[in-house]
Length: 342
Image 1 (cartoon, rainbow, N blue to C red):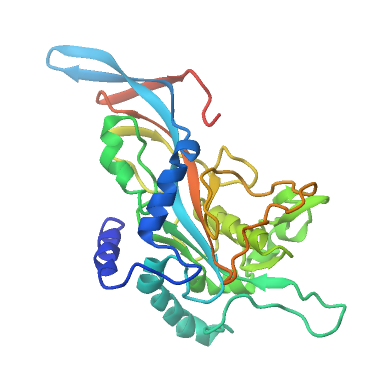
Image 2: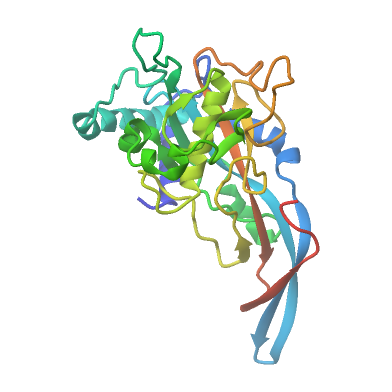
């Protein structure tokens, strides 16, 4: 199925289902509204330079210029939740949740031990007091943002960069990635999974939320919002890279001929120049930031007021782009007045 056809099928199917979800749910209109509310601070739009093009015709060739801009696009909606197929994004839960559960219960369920009815929020360990009892498992989905495809509509102005993401496209669903997300194969064999201090979200060893590796649904974190954030960071880490040992679609879409685009690189923890997060659920935030905040001196901590009773968490992932409008047949070069992202 093509990336252009999938969003249209999802949109048509939305008419079959109610848009109002229960507690711990979020709808497409709500996601769009919350994204719009945070766009002023999260988008960080600014003119950053000039592009030079060579345009030739029967009368000769000349150099033309276009403005080079930089800004962040809301590429993905990343959800972490407990029950397999229970994405808090209502429309995705109705359109893709059943398929995800069926896949896990079918072929994957026959190959692996995949609990279907209650796949999430499980703990490991026996009653022995020496065993760990705080290892928690969660499902995680990374879906193309509802407004991502709109960037292609306005990209012709040269003021908005075309996104790599396609709206409603499921780039990652942990239920379909059972071997890696549940069984940690081959994630457990990466050096960052074996050596403490590598790829930490936070500052190891005094202040760390947890490691990006192994990129699985299992976390050891006493604060539930931080545990969910670790899962979101891991999913973002996977989809922004190619050739990962997971079942997913890389976030590497092409761009139209009307623009020269410099897309963002792979997501890195604690680095706002590769991407920032905006919480949508359970608490709506109108600003963006990275995970790993040092909250040791805070009375409430980073997770204060962000605990969801049902264990459902949703974020926007904003990623930085640079672009300029095509003004000739051949791109020559560009100059930057300002570094971007700042």
